[in-house]
Image (cartoon, rainbow, N blue to C red; front, side, top):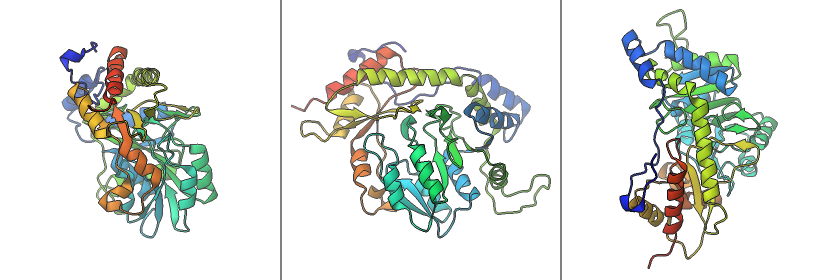
Length: 375
């Protein structure tokens, strides 16, 4: 990407998929084969992606949200059960807990990593708690040592939402392979992008069997139109899987470039008292989804929305952090202090492989200059 100048007012999108491999070739092959629903690319994706991530089983689905629903159903979560979710997260985790008839219980997040706080998680546990969903936000990975230990002590399932952290690692293991079940998203902005799509990862052969049954209307394999349980249509198409297979072939390069983007941002935005980038623990090696910064509560700083508007004037698209669940009507309740504070002050900067270092430097200069008071 050519380095922009301020005078050009370039349009730097917040996200852009990297479709630079054999995506077109494989999609045309799928079309020519007439296998446009299920097909061999789905089977290939289910073999190759879990193997790359260190998981034994992978069930491809139509998006990351249904991946969460399928995971919850597979472990038997339902009415009367409680599932703990972070109060600062994309809403899908809480929505899918409700979708299976269970109750989402919010726990607060760490003020620096913005991820589920283990002690808040522990405090939220009741006799009805059966699972926890640590959400790995923006490429970061939650404290799975602490969360996993607490869950084991209470006999709980750990369902990782790794939609934004595919190929990020915690002590050398991929996010999504650290709990009972892990879920991935292949939405267009993600590291592995098929437009829409997702996958559920597990080491448990029985959970894999159950999820495959539920994914396909509850229909027994080998006995067509015989349904053992109530199931759903969560299937991924062969066309989407074809794109995914092409992406897997270049995944090492895509991850390397996302790590470069992360490191460049860290250098450019270090040691500024006006804001704080999201913190990553030493044991986490992130593959960035987006680069998040939190404006600190200072009277001399403009509001977050003002900063975002100023960046857009310079051609840089940004996003706000997710709203705290407790601030929104479906989940309104007592405010979690850290989740509410973080949600109001986080700005998400562009982060994808096509950004060269000069463009990132331009974004960083524009960002820091927008923090000057109006006047």
